Length: 461
Image (cartoon, rainbow, N blue to C red; front, side, top):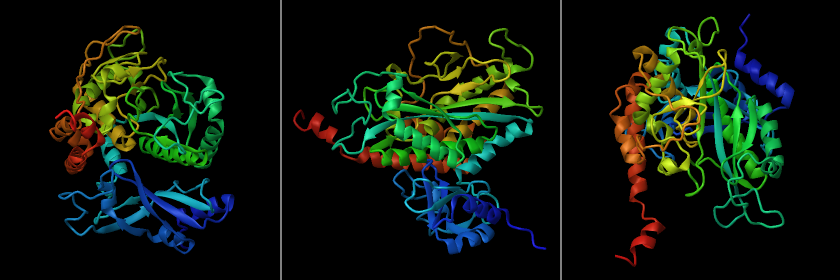
């Protein structure tokens, strides 16, 4: 008796519960964390589940504008070839905001030898995880995404909510943590949570953040780093879809407004050993308060050590560097501390069982898979080499951050391209092509003549 294909079983079970799909979206994240893919019709469902399909491998290596870069393979130089592709088991879900019944699934591209394609961000993260796995260690992770809700009907870019009561004017001030801001977007949030439930995305707390119209939605911790990044990518998509439905535009740019708070992608991570015990709470040189050992300090030391060369991962775009300003509550130097929100690596209030760090430097525009890969690399590098993180910023201490990581796109690209640590984890070829991709986009952006050029120089010079 032939063995039943689990993907076919999966899609049939999903359709039995939610109704037959008229189409199925096949999705893969690219170098920038932007989803690429195609739609297939019902006649191709079982064929794609059973035998896979082919897809343009270079789609994972495009710029933010969706352009190929000369010198990067699987692009314009070598004929843009296709490679075999296969659906990711467990990823088939309905698309609740679609006009007609539709399903959705992630897929992987495979190299000619059957291995996972090096350009797939999932592959990059899986490779970065291997050294920790050899130590019998597993990260337990969650992400926090900040975003703005903009007015989709306005003639220019402006905040969509909250409004001054009785007017169409935006409420001034940060109004951070104001519960009424959440009531103003309650129908939007209702859809986000409902759609997250349908798509198995573990969305939790929502808060009004440190600017008018800025919000944050947190995700639950999971012990699968790749799945956690899937959750982050899907949450972004859900938020954008719900925003469109309710007259907003969801903005995940790192710094959409000059004088308002930027948007971060914060990553919480603890480590457990083979027995499921918190690795950071064990070992010699245990500190009394908080209850962590030298292992946590070494992990943090590794993160701080590679932070300058890893800046490009967490700040991949031109707009990313608008956020990296010392006066704007953004981490701009490799420092750490307990329960302190100005530092780059924060140790939240916790006990021995859930002891973790929060990595705070990345923008919401970054690719979650690559951010997670760089964090995993820093953690292992610190543990392996027992790197001292230096003096900890004390809780309640006032600090004036000094700019010690790249705050210009070109500088960050140069530091990343010279990195000695990251290629060991992310792959030498991938790091080479990532730097080429970002440099090509940086040059194109720099060459654009903006309105600011005329405003500043037309009359004066």
